[in-house]
Length: 292
Image (cartoon, rainbow, N blue to C red; front, side, top):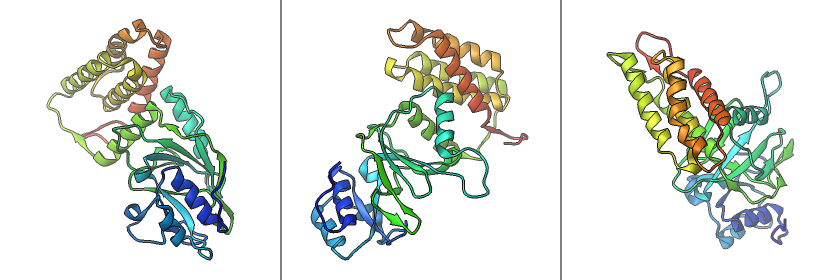
């Protein structure tokens, strides 16, 4: 990687990130707090503005405004002293295995605490929001409304360092779906389902999701099936439908995926459905008279 020639390393990193097409803005020296107000709108890729901001003696840390940059950055944290449980990288790997999705190599920055920032391109037509801990334990998302500390920035205990300058790849479909599901759950909680006939409501929901599975395009097979199974799993967890019916109907709806000229197999379809139902059942929709 070639850093833009500059006597000020913070300015050099700012110019480099801007050349990637990512709007930047200054942070307080040795800190992660913005040094300007309305930072999302003031973030820029203009080299002249950047040179004026990071003049020779101005050692502002550097931030990338993820929304304007068209990025989704997955922030993987380490447990703090005294905390238990997996680190963010382990939690994300477990989620990927559960959802049956890949974690392709992408642009990666390490953090002073031993964590990692995985930079992904936001897929066209998506508008994902930032979140903290909703995707998985110690896994945060920085997208619209958020920012990340850029490489080259420092604190008293260390710095943010570029460890993989692979061009950012598009956020995998299963991660897009997972982010959207978690955001929807967070916004709607503690939403309650009021249905005169819960079983009828559950069957109607199942029918709708099965229709979505039957019409899924080949490139969306995994994402749609995983999403449908998770959605029905939430109804299963609320006892709005029984497990056997959900599994049987979803499997039948996904029959065309196995017959299609793609990589879907019956074993993979079965695994994705089981994983989605299990994950959804852990986060049931709330019903009146039942605990969420």
